[in-house]
Amino acid sequence: MSDQPSSSTAAVVRSYLASFAAADPDAIAAHVSDDFANRHTSALGSSCDGRDAYRERLPDFLASMPGLEYGLDELVVDGDRAAAFYTLTGTWGGVPFSVQGAQRLVVRDGQITSRLDHWDSAVFLRQVDEAAATSLRSFGLA
Image 1 (cartoon, rainbow, N blue to C red):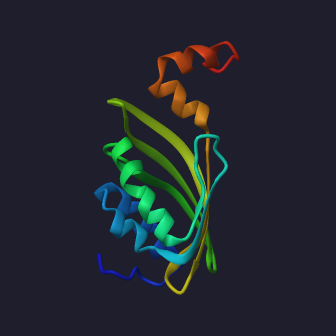
Image 2 (image 1 turned 135 degrees about the vertical axis):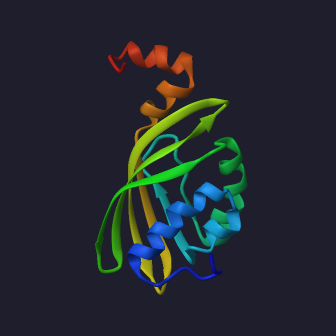
Image 3 (image 1 turned 180 degrees about the vertical axis):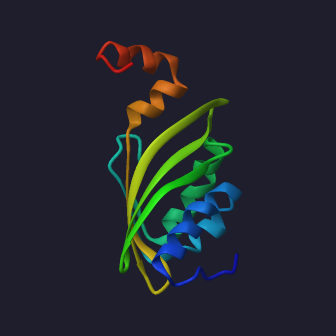
């Protein structure tokens, strides 16, 4: 991959999601703008502002989930906006997981300026933490 992702919205989003498989923080961060707004709706997600803050967090995030990959299930593009529906897979504490989610992204001048990530924390916890799975079953979430 070059230092600068392609300028088409679809190409940037595809390249961004694919870049996680290599677990290279610089390659991932190269896809986002200096003023990148990274937002999460999940209780386990953590938001931040700016490429530098995002890049700083990536090594720990990637190390916590070996084998992390975003499988792109569907991509809908409208100009500089995209909705990427994905299946995230990897391992957490040696336990494999698979979580479906969606991201709303804005791409300008070949870089992602904002991302709003939607995924269900309970689905993740059920798979990787037996105590959490037991607690969630008491709420009817098998």
